[in-house]
Image (cartoon, rainbow, N blue to C red; front, side, top):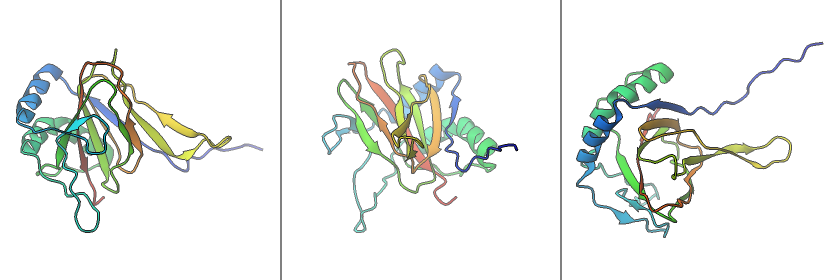
Length: 192
């Protein structure tokens, strides 16, 4: 008698390395240079240009950042690579709302998810893998034997763009260096 294995659920995380990175990085930094940052209102010590505004139903009001379309056009080849190879679809012409966040020593972004927004993207814009910690992801189910929470940290370097289901809980771990860590993030494909 043979035992066959089948996979009931699979949680994908896709990543691409942007090259030539230094050239692309300078273009993106130029686009976002006019951003106004504020400290996260929940007291987590990171700076963001994301607006924590809510509508009467409790949903985020996503403001279009002035740089979103320009950065989107810069990143189009890599976003399209994921979109066509993984989802089999063209990327939209207009940009999703983008935001950036900066982390310094002792700052973190606690466990959260982006809701039913399709897929979320994170670009590691300022990231030193010698001193910075990557995003940590949490499985929606526990270990099958003892129930412990399953965690995953992707292997990333500066210039890595990752894509994952928006409903997956994740955190920016508490940083332990004075060297600034900066990400750019956005959500896409909320309607399937």
